[in-house]
Length: 406
Ligand SMILES: *Cc1c(COP(=O)(O)O)cnc(C)c1O
Image 1: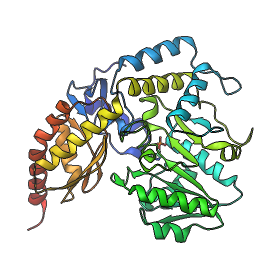
Image 2 (image 1 turned 180 degrees about the horizontal axis):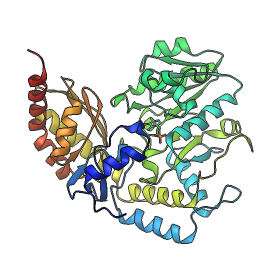
Image 3 (image 1 turned 180 degrees about the vertical axis):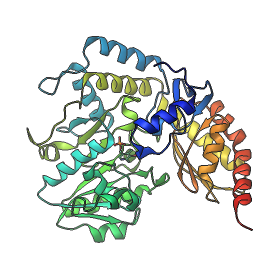
Image 4 (image 1 turned 90 degrees about the horizontal axis):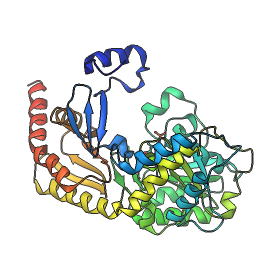
């Protein structure tokens, strides 16, 4: 069937056929180009969410189209009985950009949660069972990763989960120090908590986490699924702290929209924890995903998109702060992973009004709007959003006030 139907028609069919875990989708997308997408009703939107930090090169980027098209015609899948030049090149490239020491290795998966699952199995191979994660953390939805994710609404329907997981207040060095001991296999942390509302820890926190884990003989796993692949201005957000983790998880931005995840294990000792036969996947590291990821990494590097992310992200933060709008309290985050923090719980309303005005943004929390646009977004595109933001905030505030019982 072709897209001859209206959004409402499609959404009725969606609700009949697709499991309701995501609620009713806000849009039925037809196609995209650059930083814009069009819905099946022909309406255009500036995509300031990038599929949640995934579409690093935007939509229809010629480098990604060429790489994937070429690969799909050559070979799409070979199984892990075999390898391909692209898979090997991607592993080498990831280790290079991560500053990984000799003896480091890559395990390929298909998503962020699978990268975290691999990290959990790696941690178990230390012979210890304790894992320390942070309050507010999001590490995925499969049952292992879900045990590390903090949000009770996500966890509680599936209890009991993997035992041995402790959550400590984020960015609190003393709490971390107190929780880590001889039973701790790993500490798993996001350098910036994306799902919690783009909350960054100070570099000193990651440095302290490195020191605490090293002293306890525990692994330090940094979850870069949302922050990695150039989004915060460096290949990985942990690089700002100068810390070298024992393992790193990546996914979202790596394939530019083609599903891929990876676990990087640092150095020979950590890399030796998982031996032949102890982990696996059918699709992980397939040539199609590898070709996409190599095109993404090449393009980010060649076009200076990390420096660009810093310039445009700083411009965004300054422009929003410069509005001096009473409903904006601050702008958090780094590079092109940002949250506009509001003084009222109107973020969901602002997001739906923004959509009507042709902008895709994300109400990551009741009082926070997350922006994670393609790394190719321009300051001019950002400015079109900043220009309408005051009116969106005022309209949301007015609607909220009108709906409150007097
Ligand atoms: C999105 C996310 C995950 C889970 O990734 P999926 O691809 O959705 O499984 C894990 N960790 C972090 C930090 C994330 O932002």
